[in-house]
Image 1 (cartoon, helix red, strand yellow):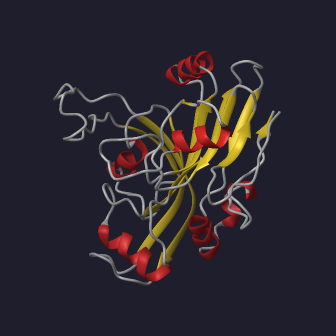
Image 2 (tube, rainbow, N blue to C red):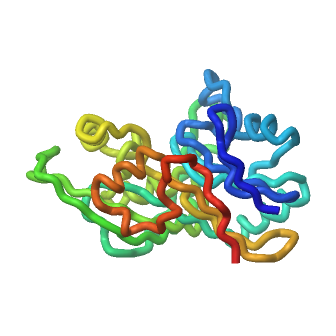
Length: 268
C-alpha cells in the first residue's frame, strides 16, 4: 500500500512506498550515493534510506547534489532492471521547476547536444573527447517578475519561473540547456551567473540551486497502473514563489506546506 510517513531530522521524506518501490523527496545538498568528488561527505541518500527501511535499495536515476525532489528506488534487483529499461526507453516522464534569469520564452524545445562533463579525478580513466550526445528539453514559462535593480549592464532585473521536461538524461542537462538559451538557473554556482546568485542571497536570503524535481510519471512495473509521484518544492523555493506572487502558477501540492516535505502520491 502507498504510504507517506512524515520525515524527521534523521529520516528522509517518503512520498511513495509499496513492496516493490519507494520514492523520496531528496533534499538539496544530499548526494545520491558515495562519490570520490565529494570525499568529505558522510551522508548519502542510498545509505540513509537503506538504514531507514532496514533493507537494500536500488537507485533508478540520479539527481545532482544541489537538486531537490523526487528520487525513485527499487526494492529488488529485477524491479530495478525493469525500471532502468523504462528510463532507457523514455517511458518515465520527469518534470522540474526552475527559477531563471531573464524573461524566458513562453515555451519551446531546447535541442542542443551536450559533450559529457567529466571530472578530472573520477573520470581520469574515461574515454576522452567523446562526441556530443543528443539532449532535448521541453520547457514553458509559468510566471515572470521584474525588479528596479541594476545588475551587470541592464537597468533592471528580470526573472522567470520555468517548468522543464527533459526528454533525455544527460549530466546537468537542464542546467546546461537553460544556460545555453541565456536563462541560467538562480543559485547555480557552476552554470549560472554570480551577480544574480549574490543578488538573491542578499535581497531575499535565498541560497542554493533553484531547481527541483517536482513530479515523476511512470507505469508501475508490476501492477501496470499509472503513478504520478510528487514532492513539494523546498521551503526556501516555496517562500520565494509566494514572495513573487507566483503560487497560482503551480499546483498547490507542489508547494511546501510548512508541515513536512512529504506529499501523498497521486495515482490514476
